[in-house]
Picture 1 (tube, protein in one colour):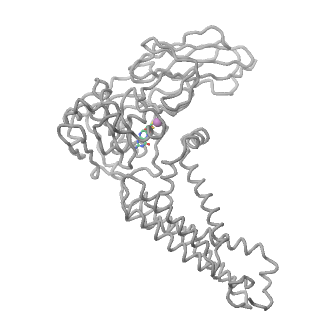
Picture 2: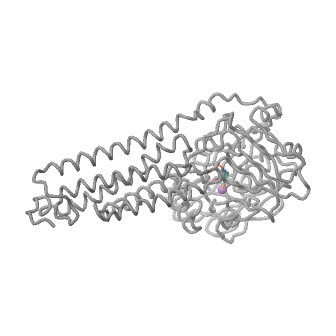
Picture 3: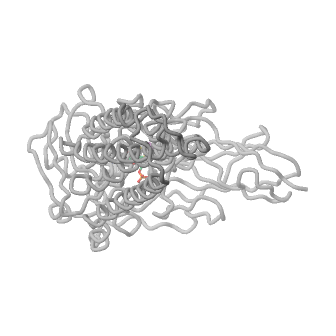
Length: 527
Ligand SMILES: Nc1nc2c(c(=O)[nH]1)N[C@H]1C(S)=C(S)[C@@H](COP(=O)(O)O)O[C@H]1N2
Ligand SMILES: [Mo]
């Protein structure tokens, strides 16, 4: 213990010391992530400690947390997760800085423990091997070095600390700390950004996609008849542009799979195992179909459905080529990032247009929608059918295998439930009294929509005017002319499918097999 008079720093600025310690920890945590990001470049984008932990968080999130995230952030759940993780990192980093001492390196021990967590997380992907642990280890080694350096420099500034080195009279140590801290923080950010940047350039999937000439198709999609699109401003268009098409997946980083690296292995309960590469695939006869995709997580009235024209190859033909064992009732498909879905083999062979798609609305698949290859199966929710970035097909049985969401409490088989939605007038946007156009969409893929009914303030149900049916596998738009009087009104909608079944009024949540209930909207009508 020193008996010398402490410098002013210590007496007048005790708070600054705490802040400086906290900052040291935050900078060290930033170094772990920044270095980890760069170290991940030669291995795999998902091997960085940040994404390794993020992926495990997504895969292991309890159902209530998932529902909360979807309800609160919708399809912005990924940015929300990144922000949440960054806040957690800052808090944990600050704590690490506060408990680190030159001779009692508790913060360093905490960093090692966190490093072990990241190493564990890095091993959890189907695609990971031991090398995925390297970025976390390298990151933590650098993080500890930086933490020791900064806390050591601080100890010189604050000689009252029992562990500290002898007093230095000058203010140099403090400047040294500031320079070191700022310099290292800037370097950590630069290294992290460089890692992301180089990683993105390494596989130029963007150029690969731009160079892909779509296959020519003779088996075209049926033309879209006039009136199929109701053209009511604010209402769902018949085709959904790729830019606004909903996106749902567990991929924190969009997989970067170039066509040359793509393969589809068809194996399991088959007569002949087949592995297709890109050229094998595009040598086949292409078909084009317009099909409405729907997510099981869609709430009543929600936006998680979209309609696109897809070009691809008949899944049925590929299955026939491999020769499916009659005992196999499930196609377990796996994406390049290890997500799985289980599709009933029967649904793939009953004559519906189940396709292995390479194009969406006249373009190669957008990266977020599965480039270069995804599945599209009419009538089944996406989580049991629409595998994006698909690379593996295993023919198996529902009593033997379980896909990603089924393991997490969702259904094993999930046909799309009939749904209808009011799009206009917009919620709570006042409309003038008089003739008001109510419009929206309805879907019952594989069965088709027979009628849509509207009722205002719980009075008699009235028939809406349906747009022409395009096919039973696409949604069907509708309009209803309403003579609105001033005041607040509640409009409800329900649809009946071509089997004659009307949507049930009973509200049930999306899990396990899709939400039910009538969509309603309160409309404010001005005098
Ligand atoms: N690889 C992969 N494919 C996936 C998913 C996923 O998480 N990973 N999600 C599925 C779900 S739940 C839906 S609803 C559809 C959504 O497809 P879209 O994002 O192109 O709209 O993709 C399916 N395919
Ligand atoms: Mo979904």
